[in-house]
Image 1 (tube, rainbow, N blue to C red):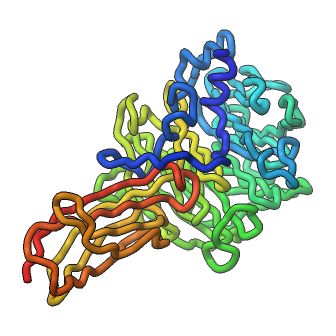
Image 2: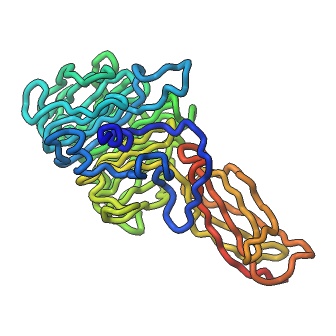
Image 3: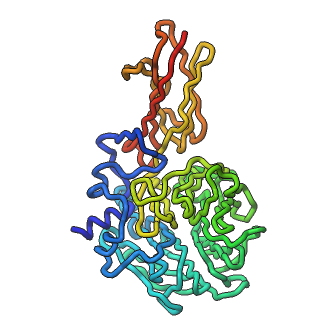
Length: 443
């Protein structure tokens, strides 16, 4: 019973069935939300050390680092979408020199030990997995990339690539890896201040990116992805790279052309120390901030949308967050921390709701942290509806505006605007955020 319980908590199980009722949040942040009541046993959304030890005898969180996820072809029946029920996760337990992974909903296993030989790792950091079950590990201390294979039942060793050096296909302290949809493998070769790419045929090349300083994390998205919004243009094919000890995040074309960048100096609440990042379905970037113990969400041009969470071990809190995995099909998120892992759905929030009186109308402004379905209603202060301004209107993230034009029959006095926002995927029809702002209407 405990085994099945922990598996469901730890593994990303897509929300395939519609919820019977929508959970409405009012006083908590909702850019990212926990699964609704009843979705997980006992509503537990954080995997702790106690849970891990119940699943893997003798296992402990020992400097956990990168995490990655994929829907394996071995678990997928394209003729039956209800079979898309389990996402395979792999995580790096760096201090123990091991990879922790799941086998469907049947088991959680680990692979590896500390060392330099076959089946061993030395302070590994990053990990990636694709739908074919190919797993790549940045075996940092051994200055190599290790290839593994998840066949749906277990992980096995394939081979180790490279050695310490500065030549093509050689590495110095590689820290991160990421697959694109065509199974090209991108590698943050930190000690050599560069990004290398290995194609599916095993050929290496160095991306022509000038000025990188010890890249420590990366993410990639491309137009041939099964689940991505942009199929053309500059947002379709991008590489995100964190460098300068987590102080800088940049995006590039897949050929290495700089597209955008952000540093701590540009943030109101810096400094930051980003440790990992992931693209969402709409091409925004979500990064873990080890220094501030939060998640940072950036838009497609790396303008910060929101900082989410605070230091701690409670809800909406993080303890030295490290790796992040994002399932773009369903908008599910896994974040590894110092002594646990957390599971979220992508949600939506409305910030800075304001009503400004103007000639013959009242102007309503707000900021969305995620593309959302927005319903806006003018009400009397007792909650009686006066006018619906929008109903499940699909609006992009960022600044938004609506107007209320009062009728002659509307009396002067106290009113309120009620916004209800719901993410367009992931938590859709399960979780909504309600924000209310009172105002005075003067004729």
